[in-house]
Amino acid sequence: MTLDSAKCDPAWADEAWIHKPAQAVRPAADAVGTGPLAGLRFAVKDNMDAAGLPTTAACPAFAYTPSAHAAVVQKLLDAGAQLAGKTNLDQFACGLNGTRSPFGAVPNAINPLYVCGGSSSGSAYVVATGQVDFSLGTDTAGSGRVPAGLNNIVGLKPSRGLISARGVVPAAQSVDCVSIFARTVATAVRVLESAMGHDPLDAYSRKLKMASQPFNAAFRFGVPSALEFYGDTAAEAAFGDAINRLQAMGGTAVPVDFRPLAEVASLLYESALVAERYTAIRSFFDTHEGDVVEPVRSIIAAGRNYSAADLYAVQTRVKLLGQQADAMWGDMDVLLVPTAPTHYTIAQMQQDPVALNRNLGAYTNFVNLLDQAALSVPSSIRADGLPFGITLIGPCSSDWQLADLGQRYHHQTGLLLGATGMPLPSMVPITGLRPRATVRVAVVGAHLSGMPLNSQLTERGATLVGSTETAAHYRLYALPGTTPPKPGLLRVASNQGVRIALEIWDMPLTEYGSFVALIPAPLGIGTLELTDGSSVQGFVCEAQALQSGARDISHLGGWRAYIQSLNPLAA
Image 1: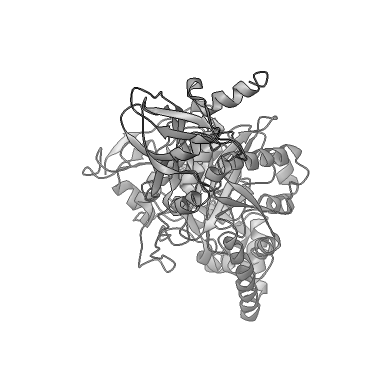
Image 2: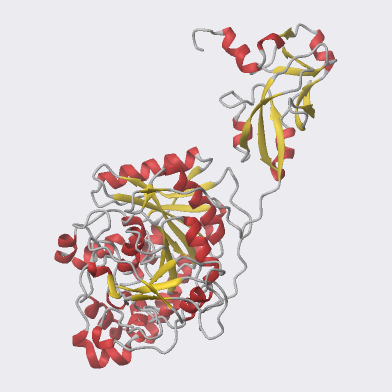
């Protein structure tokens, strides 16, 4: 390996790092400058192995120095990224707040009086403050999402088994995920593309067939029918704004019964499932229990109290609740939830560490137990200056679909990147998705934006490409007796026509037939010539229909101008 100088800013919180070598670990020479992650610096949560650096899981008595990198760390180095160091966490990845570490509480990157979120607290902080380009966390109950939502960054929680967890100290191994923090969805996706892959040496690694079509432009998103913000009216208002933004992007909100999901969430820590946390570090814990901080110690110790029969019973309950939860995908494409329902100060969290930590996981704990993918993206900065994030949740293998929608949503917000003050860069296409087949169609009358029949386009997922004009050999007529009023477009000799204003829309090919079926005679679809000489499918009219009182309105240049001429005061 070669080495490169690491950066440092005295204003950054020291608590974010556990091991920050004076020089960053660089990839082998053949990957420098050429790999897909060349030039990017990253950090890893200190429950992941990095050769030559101690792995502590935020417990000094547990520390060991590995001779090899965790599988995912090796993949990222092979892709050209540089490892800057290892970050602080809630001890043994047990917590969602970032205060359960003997190395200190990691502050929020936006307001240091507040918690950063955990357990991947340090990894989120160093991304939000711009110290690295991306970082790795782990996510069992939401540790790859809650810190993202509280720090105005992106948290990608991939489908279980998509990234190898070999070389990662487990929390609850059957539902653990390696997660990715970045300031943009595009960077997180770029990292996932290099990090993913089946690993036969990881018991829970899987070969997954990823969904390759984006969500429809007219998508349906679920919203819990009962929401809890624990008295935080700013968070409640911010979530309402998020719903409105998704609707403006073409989404339709669908109420979802959240009770099965909430029950699954409660079982993660309040049932025999917690025995898996005890199993993960059993040999160490039984001899070093006093070296584990509270309340981590009590949570893990509770795992001793359950029998195998208890575990089978709760696993069966989770399966049953999962059947109920799976039914919701028949009514929606994606589930929308707040990433975290509220913010807490570090002082508040330390005073009531169990109950407040539980509150932070209200919308995250169920995801891995139900084998779902999730993406947390920034949504807004509240009036009190604190960030608010949303999480988009989809079925297993929907990672690319979530990334596409999440990137578009993030860019709609216009937010700055993390705590850096830098603007969002341009969007980047999600390469794992194939473009959806579309038909380009021109509309000239009642289907124009804001007109009565425009919903026939938008409800089919059509998207506006732009406005232009026909070539100069068309005439436009107001057809009598039509409801709502409609025009007829007729091609004429080139010396008798004018250019007519129109809009171009892209419609999913699968929806085109049902759209055409709605068009009443004497209208139909034909080929229109545009002012630039190109052709497009569009609305035309039978010539004989213009002989029964149709009014020539061509001199106005378009249907919108005609409608405005009927009511000039409204215009």
